[in-house]
Length: 126
Image 1 (cartoon, rainbow, N blue to C red):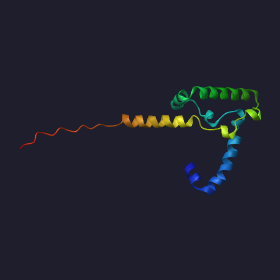
Image 2: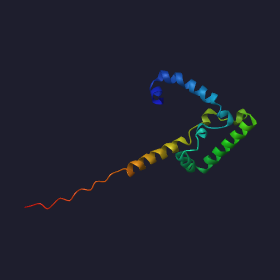
Image 3: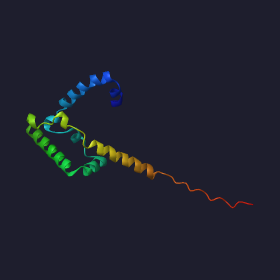
Image 4: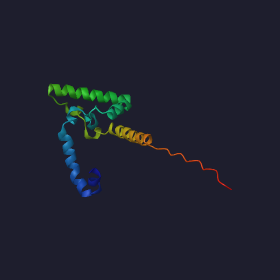
């Protein structure tokens, strides 16, 4: 659906303000989270992607999650200067997840590959 919207400039101009409003209304930025922090960790693909994160990014992710949990328990939002700004809310985990899914698909394709040996030609009669 995204490709459909992006191909039509008039529809894109109409949808961008709505998408910005929705991202703000979701409230995760007010807790200091990024959009990829909302991905559940239950999948093996996501677990592997988390292991592939650089150490600094992994530490920052855990910090954001703990801080958001603490804010949730105290029923408070972060101060404006600590909330995630739209320009700071970028995808950091999704590209790694896509890469892992691509590798898995390639591995499955190679595992299901059937090799056919050529039969030796029988002796030709002269």
